[in-house]
Length: 85
Image 1 (cartoon, helix red, strand yellow):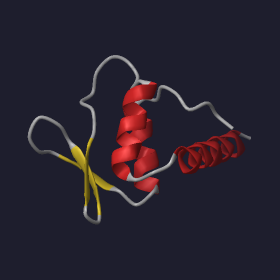
Image 2 (cartoon, rainbow, N blue to C red):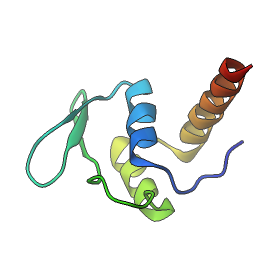
Image 3 (cartoon, rainbow, N blue to C red):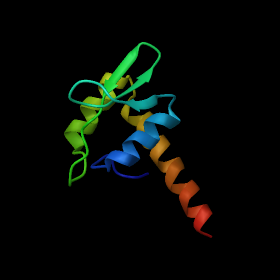
């Protein structure tokens, strides 16, 4: 199972879309994703990865537990590995 840790912004968006979020949409100082009643602000693009702490806060706001997130990431890694073969 991949480690729960730093992630690139575009990977975060891709995984959240897999979980049913739509967007990103422009608004205010940050873009956001929407899933039902949840409006989730996402970090602006910058040079580095999204830190483990910020990822934990984003997932908490999205109502996604760590086990579900790690399961999603591990499925994504397996899918990408089979596509390479």
